[in-house]
Length: 527
Image 1 (cartoon, helix red, strand yellow):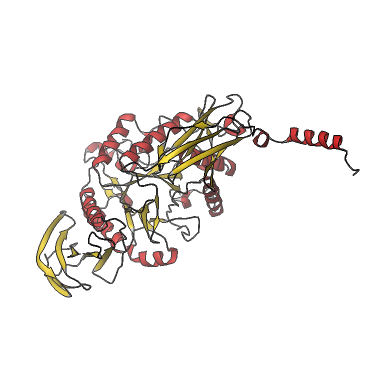
Image 2 (cartoon, one colour):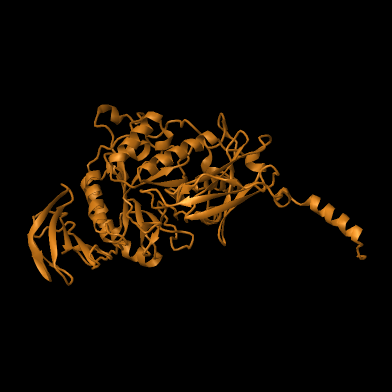
């Protein structure tokens, strides 16, 4: 190539610049916008107006880089319909943040601004993170113990029923709920949802666009849960489908995931569950789910918890893109080996449901559900509740009826295990009520016990709580080996939710008179 003259070089550079995308060229200095301060872990939402013609969901790209000092966080934006574009960011650090937008559309590119992030609101502790390898805490270090429930399709019911569900959750003991983004078609669950995630013409979905009304509704429900301090464990895919969502192409799956993360990733109470019973989704392979996790992980700059729920074939929870196990089993005796293999928290998210269905998975008793919560905890794991009670009427024998079942629709709770779960949650949380608390679980041969050690008590000394659970054993007395120190004791009846103080204090091997009945527990607390 001949040597270029200065005039040739200028011509060449001008022609090359004309070929560059708007993402790179539309960076002319613009006035920086100063936004209202927001508290840490709340949502900063940037709203811009742009093109509404064509298909902005697919044709327009938008993102923003948020800066604090030398730190930079890249956040994808999304189209919200009617020419409105948004970028949502959950700042995790107090300070003066700034941003710059990038887009392939000149009207959205090069926008700059700044905002101050102040201290968090009184009851805001941030998103949930893994703590101490096998447990959880909020981002600020406050201990978090998941006592979850399941209501797969509650956001796809009538507004009246959804409000009833929220009213029930307000007084229930649950701080996590497993719920589907897509509507669900299954036994006793045949209603048509009020909204669809994609525009729908008859039985045909337009997978190139999203319905912002559907997502606005979902966002409101997530905020409603946040006000109740409940984590939304969002199920991204599932096999129980008559609308076509379970058989989308790989490109459509990825398009959906990126949009969901862009819209919902800034909500601090969001968890990602890639699928419910992934191995029943015959249109997808194991490799497909591995790939989708990479899409999810790359899209989520807020790094929410990620897992996947199985039916017969357990996913490999040791994968680095998985933050915790989400199991469907009641094999609590295997918990120690899973904890050792995964080195992550394990949640028994489905251990069958309290109820009276004519299905093996939906008719365990309240006593058995309570027992399973205790067995999960004393083995160092966590357990999720579910309830499937049919009305005890002649009409319930007609399988064409659509009764309101908590497991599918929400509504109200009819079972008795929730009171016992509330007691257990209180016992565990009381053991970690001091600042900088650290909870550890240890198990031995029956009778099992949970050893919860709290560091940083009010007097600067180590506090300790030990919970013993006798399971099916019913001794008239038992000799309990205690660690060094002096303890008080309470006899706990999980089924009646009573706690009876045992007179005196206890040291070393202490002999306690028991009630001759199964499922007793004791709580020892260091004086």
